[in-house]
Length: 106
Image (tube, rainbow, N blue to C red; front, side):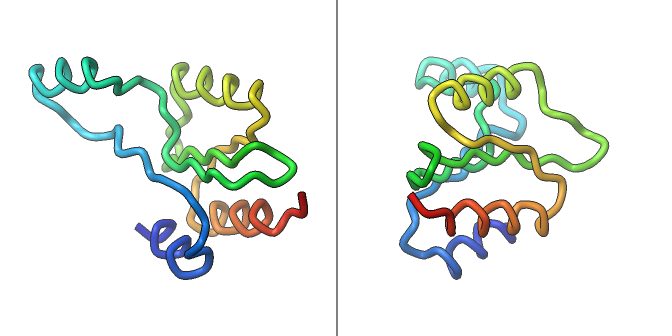
């Protein structure tokens, strides 16, 4: 929530989404989500602002958790398409990356 609040306050004109793919689902909800295109490994925050890179993707983790193989695969696919991708373990890390990225010059 801190990242959402920070983006809304500091970068209110930026275009970004938080992908709510976490959480438990019933078997039917998983079935329906799959039919609707929900994929495993989607990164938490996608910032659709072109700078030197096509966009910024941030996966949020709590230590000692690490990105899943699906998340690493997604990050690689985004990198191959010109995105900057990273994993952050604290709000401060995410804030610093967001500030760095959104202040890059094209």
